Image (tube, rainbow, N blue to C red; front, side, top):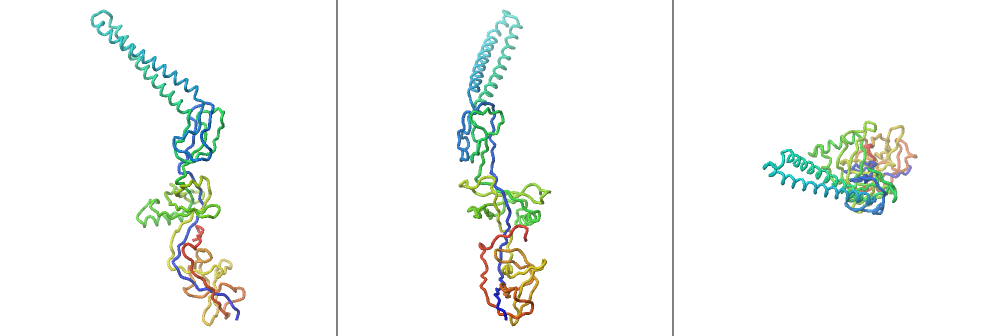
Length: 359
């Protein structure tokens, strides 16, 4: 009889993983814009470096704004002096009008002048406040802690009001947005509701893994925080937002990465080596060793692939022996000489993720 390699059907509780492609996004992306017009005097940070809230990023020529500020101070002083004089006039004219030394109209005119001068003081003070704001805006600072991007303007450029200067991104933690299908979302929502936290995605454990473009697994695990308000009707997916710690600022916005997470555990799952399964026109078969080493080709229903193994939904029993090598030289009913190949069940960490949507 022909010799074939066989392996035992393994039964084990198996974690099933989902995998999705995501994009890193800054936790906060502050677009730095000029509030005033002027010539750019200096860039005061290193592009791509970490900055703190309040750090100076750019300086716009302050001289015209300093002159406007000094003028506003002088106008306020002039208005205050005129107001004080008008108060003295009212104070002096009040008893004179009572004695008939001056007419009532003269007293009314003094009072009206005092009120007008009071308004002039308020107007001058507002102009001074505005001049102080404009002068302060010649120093463009970072509103947040984060990484400052490349400057979009060069020293000497005429900067217009609302010109974009750079962007500062807070990246610790960093967001990773990834789309999941409607079916996956409904399963997730059902699991959250059964856990007693309806509509609270943030209640899920920190169990998300991030696989980077070079294939390495990011050392910090993340957690899903929220789902978008609606499903994208064009793609049939809904965006999930997750947070990952990023203490070393290793991750930057715009990176593509894979999100990996355990989505369920299959208790008592039956596993066979993938090479034991033969597929022909959508029908999957496994060669089972029966009584007196007689081969029977049996139809099976496969589930997700897990590393080098295949989860079998139906068609096999625990402990049965299946052919893993030598399938081309056997047929249904043939007697073979089986040679056992060791097939240790994988540990949870050894189980490769299943692409989402394959379950």
